[in-house]
Image 1: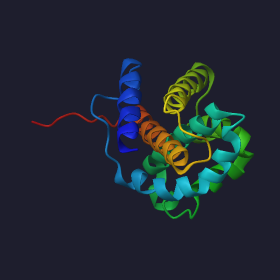
Image 2 (image 1 turned 135 degrees about the vertical axis):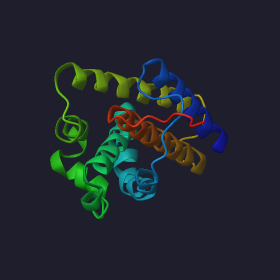
Image 3 (image 1 turned 120 degrees about the vertical axis):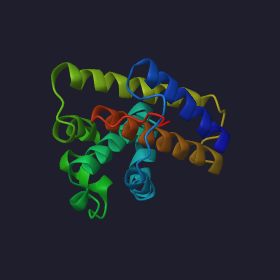
Length: 176
């Protein structure tokens, strides 16, 4: 599964670079990365339930979550780092189905063209990841299929965080 996740990372990174959404070097933000496991455990029951009918939403919502956590980290991590379940905190604002809108409007404070452009970018990333997952030929309901789904969510979370950190002005460049 490591190889599959690395391929996802490379593909998403290259794709987002061509769109000028991430830098050549991805950011390192241990605080945001450390929230991944707890967020994933809380998200997976909802994500799996929605996957069959709405795979792009099931995958794409995690990219929004990564962006939201990065924004929270930049805004007031002293408060947000203490929220026991960040996923439930976001989901329960408007419900699972409208979590994307909540994050774009109330967390990222987007409107107009920026709002629509982000929706399009996240949708394209989710579709890329979904296509990669389907090409694995994994039998639904197996441990391998579950692990591959989690790998997809993980990379979308990290890329969402990377996009948002860049939008906030954090750029990773080599220091000589």
